[in-house]
Length: 244
Image (cartoon, rainbow, N blue to C red):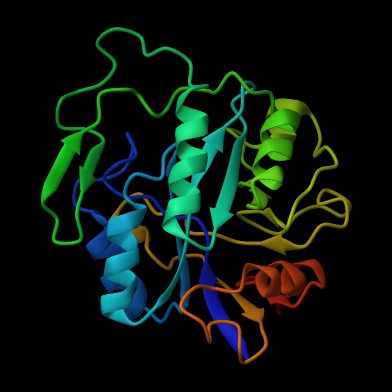
C-alpha cells in the first residue's frame, strides 16, 4: 500500500517554530491534509513528542518521533524513532552535548514544551538552535547506534545542508536523504531520496510529503514497525512530489 509520509516537522518547541504550531495543530492539519505517517522533529530535542503521540492517536494518524539534530559543522540530520521514550532518551544524550547558549539569545516566549491540550509545561531556557559538539560523522553514527532512522536533512539547501557545509554528501548509515528539489545526478550517492515539509508554521504542513510503498502490516501494532520503514526506504519504494 502507498502511505503518504512527512518526516520533517517542527512544533512550538523549536526556536524558529511558530507558537501557533503546538503538536495538536501539527497532528490535526496533517490528518486534514491527507498525511498518514508524520514525524515531529524539533531542533535538538524531543520534549514535545509525548504530546504529539497523544495528538496523533486522537487524529488517527501514525507517528514517528525524533529531532532535527545539528552537527558541529551545522549540518542538520533527522533522527527518527518509533516510540517517544526512545526519542526522549536520545534527546537527553544530545542535550548534554549542546554548545552553550550565548547570553540573551532565548526570549521567554520561545521554545515552549506543551501537553496534548496545548497547556504550557515549560518555557525551555537552553537555546536549541545551537550546534552540538558532535561532528557530522559521529552524530550519524551515534543516532544509528541508538536505533534511529538517520536521514540527512535538505542536503541541497545552501544553509544547514550536508553538500553546502561539507562540500559533498559523505557515506553514512542513512535510511534515506532528504532533498527540497530534484537533485543533480550523483548528488545522493545512490541513497534513496525523500522530501519533507520542514514545517515551522501551520501553512507549511503537508507542503512536501512523499509516498512510501509499505506492507499492509506496517502499522498493525501499537507502534510503527521501524524495520519495515527502513526496508522500504532502502529498496527505493518512494514516490516524490516532483516525480513525473
